[in-house]
Length: 166
Ligand SMILES: CC(C)(COP(=O)(O)OP(=O)(O)OC[C@H]1O[C@@H](n2cnc3c(N)ncnc32)[C@H](O)[C@@H]1OP(=O)(O)O)[C@@H](O)C(=O)NCCC(=O)NCCS
Image 1 (spheres, helix red, strand yellow):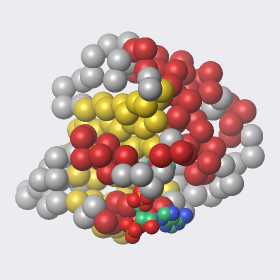
Image 2 (cartoon, helix red, strand yellow):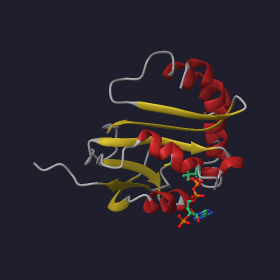
Image 3 (tube, helix red, strand yellow):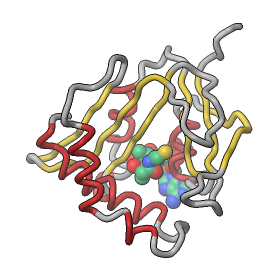
Image 4 (cartoon, protein in one colour):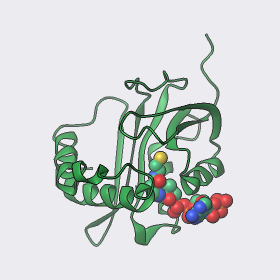
């Protein structure tokens, strides 16, 4: 990813949220999380180099963003249960027209070495993503929480690889 990708990544990210979660999210959620807000956020994130251990990959077709993935050290975040694996899949999004094309697999493989113990958080209702992660060796570890931005939705943890000992 480079700073010039920010607008394309934001558009893909926003459209994917509308498509995947639109029917579940609280009414008015996208009044605040607009495409413009997403662009500003991605511009901020891509303004500097990634932090150590962070991988950021974007896929393009004829210069247009069609997917992206990010990974890095597992993050302690607000109300979320503490990490149980050292590494985390932070984000994985494929544009509507590329779903089912194998791009999701290529992006996952690009940011996650198979031998690296990893966790990820996914909406419990996101059956498609959960099936994709299960095919990739992730399993539910039984932990879930509710984010205060969308209190009606469960966010579930999936893990791959052994937990560190000790
Ligand atoms: C998650 C994602 C990257 C996976 O890529 P993909 O191209 O959809 O992957 P696939 O087409 O291989 O589908 C994955 C599995 O879901 C199944 N599936 C497809 N549509 C489905 C649906 N509507 N409901 C349930 N399962 C579905 C597929 O049959 C496949 O299962 P299988 O491996 O047992 O055959 C992609 O769906 C995506 O970007 N989704 C929107 C954003 C998102 O949810 N990101 C994850 C955030 S945690």
